[in-house]
Length: 125
Ligand SMILES: [Fe+2]
Image (tube, rainbow, N blue to C red; front, side, top):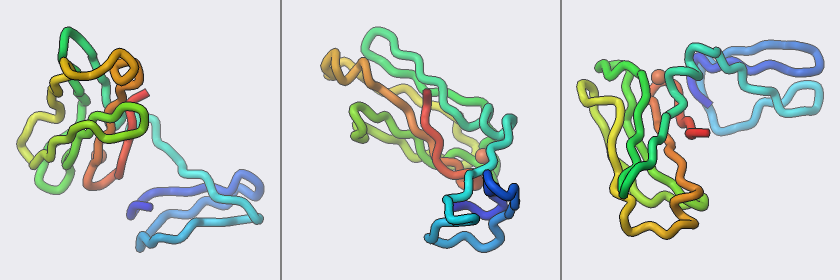
């Protein structure tokens, strides 16, 4: 849960905004509330992964400013983190990981995960 994130109840359509994030789950009408995802925010946070000759290039179109930046990019396969880089404001919002030692199975299930300091964690598709 992130400050400013919105959730909606799919039954009664109550919509709430997180003011003070906690660890709990948001429940309304007896069901988990659904996170409201703004299309523009989604477009800027879902990483693109391009796999090519021993490399996986992860990129996205996201600001890298002091108060809003991508802090981490992870490379995952079969649900496990294989490698990661930590980024700082001013860095490029992307990286390239070497994949030459991976098996075909690992290559086939490669995914990227990014962490934005404001908007949380997002996975490639
Ligand atoms: Fe962000």
